[in-house]
Image (cartoon, rainbow, N blue to C red):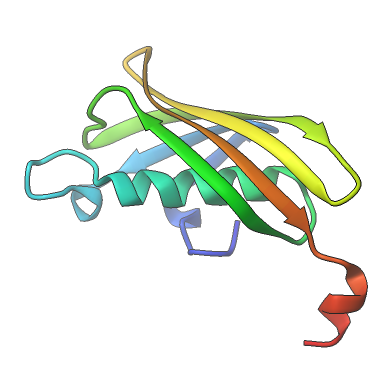
Length: 117
């Protein structure tokens, strides 16, 4: 889980299940986790789940409850793997409540493109 360097706050429990630790650094001035931070966590978790180089095509996030400082659980799964696109969904829970859910579409970067960088 390299991309945005969220690894120090995310622990992989098993494939598709992650423990997140929200800290003071993640809070907005209202004292709840900033929505942009949640988006970054979703993008990193869902992108890493597909186990190959991908770029985000689309990311939709629904915020359902305020996320607060402390432990959270993220669950992600691949819905469909096409020729070029992978469709993934995830949710973040705190205190057994869904605080946010996301759907992402990822483009599988061709190996030929990776070699040219």
